[in-house]
Image 1 (cartoon, rainbow, N blue to C red):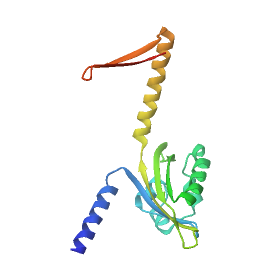
Image 2: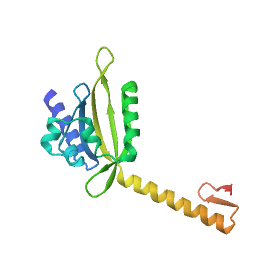
Image 3: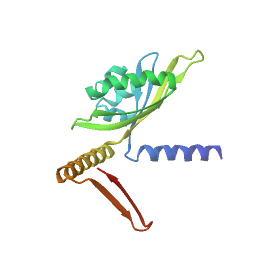
Length: 169
């Protein structure tokens, strides 16, 4: 029964990792500054599988991050030392350009409270970020059209609820 549960858990993890959304998993040995990643992590960070499996300094992984995101990311890592939890969005160079990812992890501490280990996962959020950008651009065009047309307000009639909502420009 225990083996069946372990096999089922392993199968669920494999399915989640193979979903295409997960771009890699890592464990950062903070004391020795070694980031070890799986094969997906290696591909995402454009390093060899051997290098990802053997581990590399954090700074090597950071080289793949968009320069505009690096300082914020460093601050958030330091904040995770205190909070224990880490979640950030950043752009990674994927060889064809920049890809948006979400990195999530947990900082583990030793008995003295010193951060020692930092496992995490990378998730592909590129499509979501493109949709968000398109929505921002669409909203800005609508705002400009309202402004240029002298529109002083908008309204919306929700037929099923028989309710009208609106705003004033």
